[in-house]
Image (cartoon, rainbow, N blue to C red; front, side, top):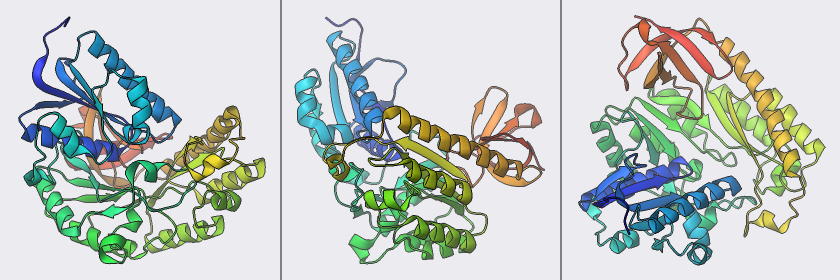
Length: 437
């Protein structure tokens, strides 16, 4: 028996995982709205007839969060708090049969490329005229911008090809049209995302075409920052840096997950690069684009990682001085190449090693931030929290990087606008400043 009145044809979309999943949810929401559904993202009202959960299946913690969320809504369905529960995304792609058996309360499970099938289940049409349309879940002045799907890399630890399939680039002309629509709606910053940005174009144009794409996106009126996420180091297309230097609206920022700093581990991970070659690449990038901010992601506790391997990574991080860095404990994933190896680094050692790297990075970040004091930066403001306007420089991406805090009493700043801010103080991950007229 239903315990509350549910709004018919109201859909609550819940997104878990990365920005690529968020992009997919935004596309799905546009299709639902085009089919006359009342759609919300992570609704606070809790009065939706239908819930669609877009899951992540990347590592253990993400899988647990996805399963917990599915179970919570399955229970809500039993209690009459929702009528229908559907699950899509990476976890559903990877473990559909298991999930169907374990959580039968879910009405249907869909894979990562089954949006038309999901819509058909809801008695809705996949509207081709809406291709490229999205309902943004981010603040209206920035958007994640997926340029390709899937991955062809053979990395031993990664299950993404199992969930997302082979690399498929979106044609340049389609992406430019999408960027124009976003700009017309007030978007000023595009964050380019893909499983592997640097592979872009090889399937369509038989060459790496990321530089060509960025150059054309930079022509779109209203786009003031273009930011690059998730580049692969092996075969990195250096002509991208030429465009970065040439175009003022391409942020001097690069997110390039390097995964490890030990050649032994990089070989075991099947990354196709050594620590020495990685160091050369970072040096070349910095030489070509002075002042560029480089973010990377690492893994601690990969099978066979010795104290010597970890120390090699630690020393490399210390030498390199990355602007931004995150690190994950290794997750032993079924059907990956690494699953053939014994997961022989204890969980507590994985965590200790990750903590040591983050403690090192905290000190590096503090020193780099101290060097910003007294300098003036162009800052894009995203939100208000307490007594502060909060924004970012071109060297920072939302949610993962430094923030710039300006006291509201300093003067009025409209969210989504840029302002010149002089940095007056800094700590490990935040900059504080005042408005410069």
